[in-house]
Amino acid sequence: MAIIKTSKLITIDRYFVLEENLHPRATGEFTNLMHDLILAIRIIAMEVRRAGINDIMGITDFVNFNGDKVRKLDEYANEVIYCSMLRSGSLCALISEENDDIMIIPKENRRGKYILAFDPIDGSTNIDVGITIGTTFSLYKRLDPESKDVVTLEEVLQPGYRQEAAGYVLYGSSTILVYTTGNGVNVFTYDPTIGEFILTIEKLKIPKQGNFYSCNESNYYHWDNNVQEYINYLKKPNVENDRSYTMRYVASAVADVHRTLHNGGIYMYPSSTKHPKGKIRILYEAAPLAMIIEQAGGRASTGTGRILDITPESIHETTPFYAGSEKNVMELESFILGERPNRE
Image (cartoon, rainbow, N blue to C red; front, side, top):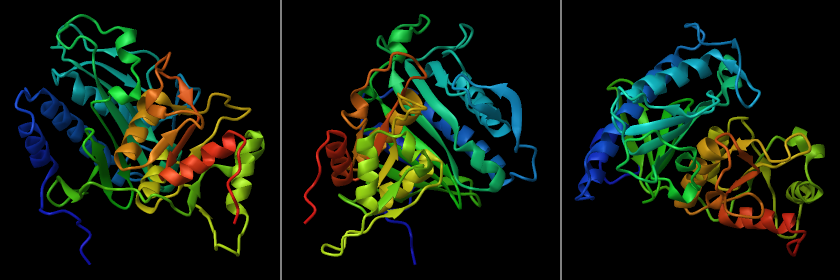
């Protein structure tokens, strides 16, 4: 059975060219930047497929800004993306989960107008046991696109609705790139036999409601009472209207959000007594995932407000994160506000 859900067979390189043709004033800078990023993704995907054969498993001696132990794959993927983008001429700065501070493009390299924020490997603890992991990325324009000066912190700390593009890569049974520039969500699947990403789904749409929920329920007793009530509501059988929810959790936000995009439902990472401000990083995790979800017709929320409206105050700031089908997320928000839906 064919899995390609598009009107024509097209590579990602061709897709970028077609997108550029829609913008008469395009300079090619954005297209060149994406070419460089895709190259880095191909290299990372190749090493992930060889995990266990190469020396990419295990932990380094380092701990990142967020207090997480840096794994060999985190370090490798971070270096690959940085080196691939350094001389693109399209960037003025990069922000990564693995670096404490902004990575400024050196003055000897040409500086462009874009800022790239990324998490090189999401769910990296899964790599040692061959479970799905991912990469998230987000692209912004600096406040003064013509400036060649060193980028300021203010230019980096922009709300998510200003993203020029956002996406994630899923390294699983196949390597999948999900990508948007604000004109819908397209899905590309990597074909290693020809070394190309092929467009496999055009204008992906999330179901309005789904019966799947995804969260780390071992944190249940650290969550707010209203969130606990919502989980109880999902788990309680209701024979009258056959409401039945199923839990699915991979411990990689990319994998869990990807499944939610296709099947509907809700992905949750609430605040807790251990992490009062949540644990999902706004700039390079929450914002790109929220843009993807919204562009697919879903909803992404802190529980009380829109994720894409947040202006972060630091590059590693975190937030509670709820994303998925519109009706599911709105139902969650009603619980957080202390309301309860009708149970007929």
